[in-house]
Length: 294
Image (cartoon, rainbow, N blue to C red; front, side):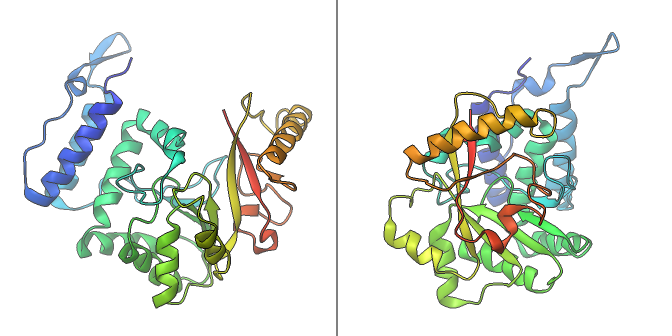
């Protein structure tokens, strides 16, 4: 049962941002108040329960949702996310049509975590919470932006200054905010512990000049390209032979897009190669990594 529609979620986000900026009132979607059945009794649905947590954040400024999520089987690293969409991803283009980040909005906690983190980035007090939580992350691989992207030069400088204080962390990410990277390069020095994958779907994708400048940056690894697939990717661990055939077909399809030597992403980070994950590995520099979208 869909308690909250996508349009209602977008309206709620704008209402929250207006509240933070101007102190205006927030009206939550009616679906928040629809109870669910649990063990043969009616209880508050998860949207309402997580909204109450988020209200506490709005009143106190103290984060109520985990800022950096700890890894799972698909992404075994700590990571950070903010809200996705044109308003928050200034380089977004065609990717808005297939962005997987919106799928996370099915889960109230994930939705409110994205909103919370987006707000934290907007103030010195919020960034102090980000810095404090970051200091407790162990030295390891770290994905900067699973959902969302660098929204400004100020935000990029904040993150890269923070990474420079933690050389033991190996950060990487996928970004379409190419113009912000170029602006940063004109003013500052990139941290040595960040690796950039230029993500397909950027509104700058047709600008050869911008992409060539991006490729010259010291943090640049290569392209990460989403290509339509006729079927869902098989689990590489549970169905290795089936995945090999699927990857072969996707590799052939990649050639139709001008990609002659594609490395197919198996969908699970961490151990996709014997030398660690490809997207954060400079040994895969200028290798086109392809993933299928279905």
